[in-house]
Length: 314
Image 1 (cartoon, rainbow, N blue to C red):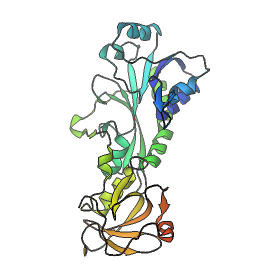
Image 2 (cartoon, one colour):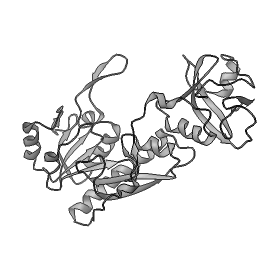
Image 3 (cartoon, one colour):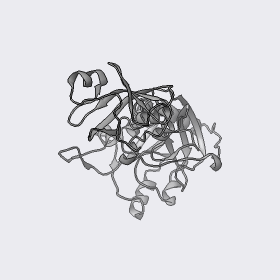
Image 4 (cartoon, rainbow, N blue to C red):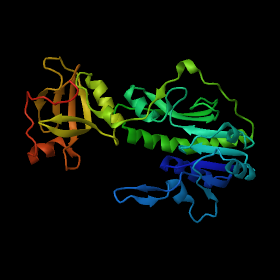
């Protein structure tokens, strides 16, 4: 099939790589305009644009698809289908019907659960045991299109957003190729989403990462894992910002106020929560890199004491 590809970040680039290695033909690539990035604000091309550099594939970077000239250009590619992955621009209804088979999208959840911008984080926050990739036919709604294909993935109690992202980025490309092959052979039956089962995964903000010690240890552990590698869960101790990178959960009676350090050893800080103990194993202090608690204690950069409290949302 002749394919127009639209995407921007690394997640999209991994899928584009699979298309380039397949028997299908990528006739054009659309990606976000180059943007300043990093501390030096150097103008940088997206991972998708970098991938196709030198491959003699036309790269287009419009700021909108509403202009008639852009729509005419898309139509001129005579594509069978348009694959859209984490692109960052809305496609108006007129564009969705330009390719022969319309537009399809790769979404990092098992729709209709977790529509929206942050499905991986919200799956961890909710304690979901399974997630996956859904390939859907795009319509005018936000992740509301008919489902074409699903690939499933377990969420373990140690998964972070980063590790789960790596699992899904390994599943998605093969799911996409399988979907395209079966569409071409007319072997797929589209399935409507049950809107009653839909959840919306709002964009993550830094404010959400502050630990509320009144929550259970299980809930706080999910927050820590969901916000790793960004924005990283945090709290305060002796007026210092403490970022929590890794922790685990221990069942215990609630004999102390939430946020109180119940025990300290070389492996962890044991902090009372609304239900159970949170065993903090890896933290980051201001101006330092993330370190195991043992290294923090040996360095004596901060005086953690049994009976003292963390100043979070308490």
